[in-house]
Image (cartoon, rainbow, N blue to C red; front, side, top):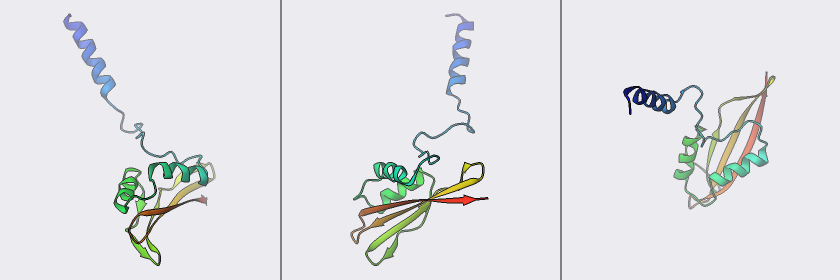
Length: 121
């Protein structure tokens, strides 16, 4: 190969390997916009199966960039609450997803609640 061909290949490799940090989207992040509560609950249930530990749920919440509480005891076991950042839903509406993960006394996930809070402005 000639030197020019090598330079062209090198520039092509560099150009394709660089990611624009502003437009790059993590493919593992959930796409919350346009979901209703039922579809969001199904998607979360696929990623967080029942019977797992609070530590596994915490790993999921960190990967999803959710704000979450510590494991909190209640009368029937434990729970963790989490929420997404406020996101634009439409021109005059924003939304925030609220999640609650319920655990039994053995610290195994038994139930997931997902609610969408709408914020008008």
